[in-house]
Length: 483
Image 1 (tube, rainbow, N blue to C red):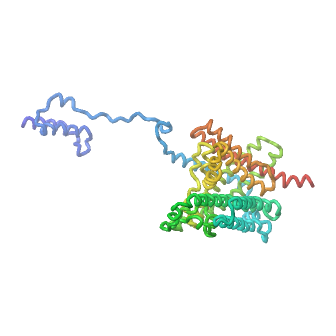
Image 2: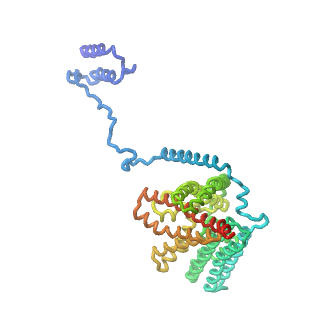
């Protein structure tokens, strides 16, 4: 034992000049301490082979089998920093354009001019009067349904009255907008939008009540009627839904599809509502400012290239208009579908807040139209597309019919207020059918998404320039030529 201790001691003395592991000597000192303590722990004499060739830990490796982050096989998808960079670059580039616009044109934002877009005469409010008169058509549809519920009208007579009422809803405001000179184009657009929404809502109101009558007729001899009439869950059943309170809740609710029992939120969240109202106020001012300061000068400067048919300058004006037009469209989307509709839903405690889906990830044109405007999509699916399929139409015919109806309403909301019929909006909507086929056939994944974004960014300013050019020629150049 003494020899072993001496050997261990001599070994420690030989390495004593090195700092110990406790004083920061590193791996070599720690290895010597382990070797010195090993004989006492095992009771065996050390061999020269173990002392000469101690077991060493493998050297740390800095390389392993892996792909670059930008490779699709890497599985990496956190590009938040690149997204932030894109946002910063977008802000800087648009700030330069905005500064250039201010230097060239000065401040063009004028709130008084905005008021003149809605009113020609401060004592004449034709658009507001049209909106108030819309209540007559809503009450007429309600009275028809009340009489159908008690059997005072036949289904054929009720259908005829509903068709006349719905046709008048579309024709009456159009006639007023075309014949009344005191109404402005912007006022006409707002009034026609209200009547279009009323048309879609009353169409759904009539359909759902008809389905309820058909179901009641089928279940008349069954006991299900008594079970459905229970009040344990306070569910409204037909014809108890035929009240003015129920009708006007539906007319003001942010949906186009009628139901007897809408999902309701438990309470009104005041902070949420206040945020939405502040967003509405701020974004309204921002849109008006961008239109007056950015879009209007660009459109005015585009008239001369159109008149001279200078195609290179026309393309340059188109691309210059595409940026502010697309930015305003995105702001409008958030303002209307998120801020406005959520504010209305919160006030009315309307529970279904799915007003849009992730249309920005669209890899096809069809996916975009199915997800960017959910209230309209649900109405088309429920009251147009599926009924056509049930009547034996093919999916392609039904889809074409939906696009045709959408094209009609787009043209209806543009041509009548402008007092001219050029069918640019109608053509643009119908062109979505072959465009959807081309994108789905030749572009997939990210390329399809880029194609959808390109059609949104370029397609809208083309239609804007077409209508503005025709409006300018019709209302400004024609009188000069005639004079």
